[in-house]
Image (tube, helix red, strand yellow):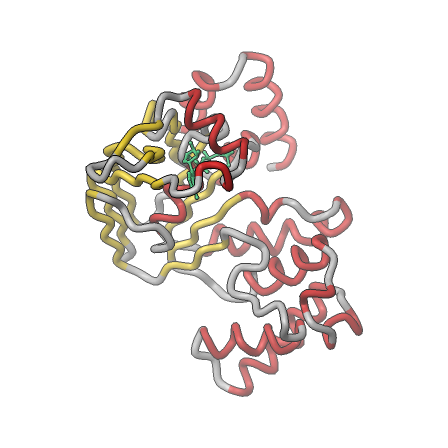
Length: 260
Ligand SMILES: Nc1ncnc2c1ncn2[C@@H]1O[C@H](COP(=O)(O)OP(=O)(O)OP(=O)(O)O)[C@@H](O)[C@H]1O
């Protein structure tokens, strides 16, 4: 039985070199009134403020919210990439975090070597690693590119390899950002079944997406993030109906039904 407990979590980013941060991030932070000072008088962005919720086996949670609302920060905190300044994150179960296409890949190693690395990391034996290599190679369709360093791949090729690798191992708690939906149309048609099998196989799913129909199809709960705080938490249809303009909501409902 998997469990995830987020208690009064706040995350702040000190801005040591304000000028080197992306303009987009600075503008969002300033516009949403989340720039402040910490005890050492450093300029900080308050990315998450006192966030609490809990999840258990069977929960399939979607995060929605405007750019800069805190969705990625929350996913990354749950994955252990960011440490909260206060609050507690307790996780009972094995976490698979699919937050970037090339996450966990060594760009200097070949595609094939990366598959092997992932297998070793997941505790697979030689036979299972050989099966993983065959499975990922067949699915990613990268042919001879698998023998070249990943740094020579196009971004679409990295998505293919990242996707094939990510979906080859059955996760218990799955944290996902929407990069995984970013393959080209032909690839996504082929990928859809594999992705849905993985998503449905996870005990707990947490997905951040701007794609409302995907949230409607996969999630049974939605948290709406706004300026680093939870604005609404409930059934996907109710929260999305409040979040989206009526035509967009109707469109998403129709698209979710078509895809079902
Ligand atoms: N590495 C960072 N350094 C400084 N501030 C950051 C950093 N990452 C995020 N922030 C700030 O934290 C806030 C939340 O950002 P976050 O990326 O979590 O938003 P998001 O909801 O995922 O947005 P999007 O939909 O655009 O991906 C923003 O105001 C942003 O300025």
